[in-house]
Length: 276
Image (cartoon, one colour):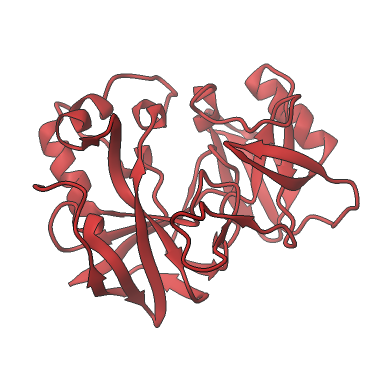
């Protein structure tokens, strides 16, 4: 039996996530997940890939506000509204190959983040009326996502991380992989073959394994970059020069997910890897 063991939301793209016991699943993923993002002077998205220090900026929800603070100094913080006031002043921002509409958040947030990253940057929010579509090659319907790399949800089995950690000299925590849903039960990499699962009458579809980048090599407690886990994963989870870990997931209904919920496997598919 598979059950949800952990749920995470990442309100600001590439900043620290929030572990929750229950989350509202919206049409673009878990509520508040990656609705905010940092951009440079060219309105191009910023991530830990280029700025590892972003992992030290943590997030929390307090009432009707999103709190962002520095891990090493919680008093060094800034607040933004969870429901920003709509504005007619919008810009086009770049997320990989996608251009989508966003609105600036506040001068205060811009100044705070610019100081933390030691470079000019601005904070943007994705309004509700913006519908950023997922890659049409993997879409089921008119699927949308937020400022995520490409899909509304990422699912990983705890058994998969346990298997990886048995191969590593030093075990790594799940936060290296930034999943939305972590599940307990089953065998390592069972998520690879989950093409259709159901949780609380919500249908979820595994459409594409997640190709991993250097963010997985950044220690989320101190921003230090190393070789693992990509070096080890390359030995057994590489295809066509890409390293895979976790399954990108689309959804057909909205609702609520919580830890302990049972995951029913409705349909499976052939895995990308012959052996686990």
